[in-house]
Each structure stands twice: as structure tokens, then as C-alpha cells.
Amino acid sequence: MKPVLLTIDLQKDFPRLFTLLKPAAKLDASVRELTSFFRRRKLPIIHLLTLHKADGSTWTRQMKRDDFRICVDGTDGFRELDCVGRRPDETVIHKTRWSAFHGTELDRLLKARGYDTLVLAGFLTHACIRVTALDAYQRDYDVVIARDCVDTYDAAHERVTLAYLSRYVARVLANEEIFALLGTPDRPAKR
Image: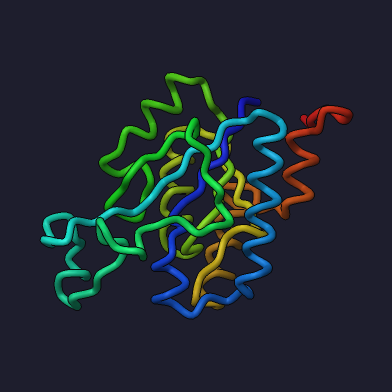
């Protein structure tokens, strides 16, 4: 198992524009715990950030139709949440669509580095997390969704999404279960 953590859209615009389900402090603590685990184990983290141009040239049809501005270059809303604590040696990839694979170099980079297990954390569970998980599965990656580190504004859609993904596509695990799966220096990974 060669794991990598993908933080997806953990940016200021998401809690600013949507009423998310988890208390901010709880999500913040869970993300800090997960990223700290990866960093202590010297496991890679890749940050996927939505980035749209102010001129609208990268916007989706819905964004144009509704004049819905999110994660626009140069705005505070594009910036990552403090809980991510990105380090200079961690890879950043910008995206313009829900899937972290769409129009990005993510798949090429993962394959070049030999990563086979993707742990997904971020916003929104029923949108970017779901579509990225499906695209990862279609590319034959082992997918883990960090249940404590994903959030959305739609409880019903999140329940359906996680139930479907856990049945067919991914393991949906709490942080402690991820730590057990990946192992710690004094406890080998579960196989």
C-alpha cells in the first residue's frame, strides 16, 4: 500500500458560501489530526484547490447562469483554511471542476510516484468528494474517504453518497480507522 492524502477544496469560500453540517471547530480538529498523522509518518499530501479566473473563462455553466463566484483567483475565498497548514514541500494542483482528475495532472503524478491508495478529505461530500472518488475508482486506485474530514450542506445527499460509495467504490473510515489501516511506527498497517 502506497497512500497519499488528497485535501480537496478546503478553502475559505466553502464555509462562507454554504451552511455546512459539521461544526467548524470539529472539522478543523479532524483535518489537523489527519494531516498531522500523514506528516509524522512522512506520507505525501497533495492539495487540490478550485481556482477560477475572474473573467469567467473557467466557470462552469451553472456559475455563469447564476453569476455564482467561488474560489476566484486573488480573493480571500480562494485561500485554504488554516487547519490545512500546507507546507512548502507539499504539492498543489488547481482544478476548475468537481473531479480532481478533470483537466489536471493528478493521475499522471499519482502514477509516476506509484501511489495506489487515495485518502480523500474536504468539501463537498456529495459533489467534489463523490466525483473524485468515482474517477479514482475508474482509474483502479484504492479509495478511502476520511469521514471525519468531509462535509457538505445537504445531509440527505451526503447519506446517500456515502452509502453508495462505501458499498461499491471506497472505504468510508473515521480518522482512527485510517490510522489503524495505515499503521503507526509501533503498529504495522492492516492488510
